[in-house]
Length: 161
Image (cartoon, rainbow, N blue to C red; front, side):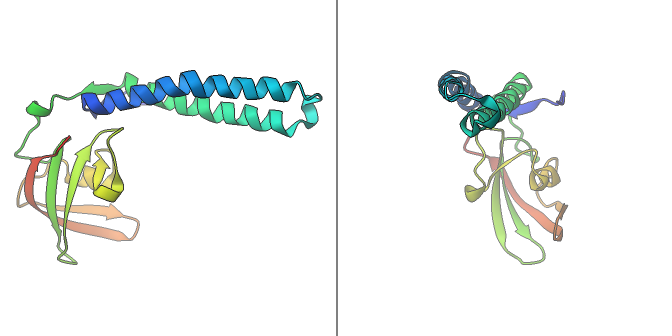
């Protein structure tokens, strides 16, 4: 687990907290009931339902631990204090791909607010990391599995967080 702070809006933090509460409460209780019911079926050595429920419990606990880590490292960012002269968390960035000449717009958001289908990307993503710190008119060279993407920053505005 890392000590790096994770920028989030209050809304993103609250969404993650609600998800954690649901997992810790309802989902864990249901899994505990499944384990108890499966245990009653007899020999645990050959009880597939029991082993499946225990595995599900382990995966749920791992997701709970991950969420707890994210929330413990959360840094709540005031939307009104976000910079507008350079790309940062909370920026909406309009870019042009210098190779394909296609324009795209990205919103750089924190955990709980990402949605790749609407170009709301995590600030920790490779594309966002390549854009962070750049100013209007600058070029970002971003390594991706298929090679390099060359984006020119056309506009930086506050994202609708």
